[in-house]
Length: 361
Image (cartoon, rainbow, N blue to C red):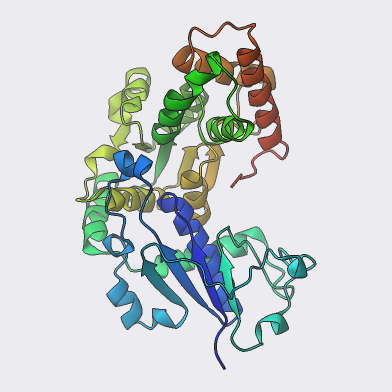
């Protein structure tokens, strides 16, 4: 009987793709199916951060994966393939009663089923009754079953040697691509309102996936006080100096010293080092959240009220003040544009903290 096929695709950066892949692969295996992971090239905006060569073969040893029999349930397709026109999605109304964790196995016994899934598949079968630690353990096992290329394995071995076996904290500061979006698009608010979609997208990235550096500091101080090394990673490497000046460079191992030939390999290398950490300090960015889930360790979300040393108003005002000072310094605080920024920061901050410590995709 033909296996059900799950065509999945993401066109954004590595960790969003990896998360989509792992969740789809887990569910497809339970359904007795196969994942076709479509891996398109990266849009031009991100070439400045990730390079133009974004092939999965740079990071995954696909020959080894298929030699082990991995093609039975996972196949990578490198390029701009379209979804099959005869496919359907598990987000269709006919599956509403079963989504996310009440799927019946009989649904997938019909021969020739083809699904297309552009969004995360955090689905489970009704009889699994999965708790989050068990789900994370399954995702972790799949991640570790993906063989890495020599271009990732060799620098990863060197990084592990440099960090030692005593346990380290991983500090990840997400800024680069989001701050570049803000620099390009936000100044327009001084002259005319942004479209609602553009405004919400910008503010969502800013509040959910970044945080002012002051929010990181108390957690890094505690990690330093515990005697742990701090492995530092950021898409804005210059932020390393901010922490080193305040706490002493001797406490940190700067991730930029872990070198790979290709930017995509470097991104995979950094993520792999983070999954080995004893603690991860970051925002709600997928980079930190997925690494913590795979590693089975505490994820300190610096902007969450469950971890923050600031009250709600202090945190909101810090986000607001930083945004104004760095991106629209000439925008008057009492202008309609400034008031809309503050209101949207407040709305988003309260929303993402509605359940303290939750990850937001």
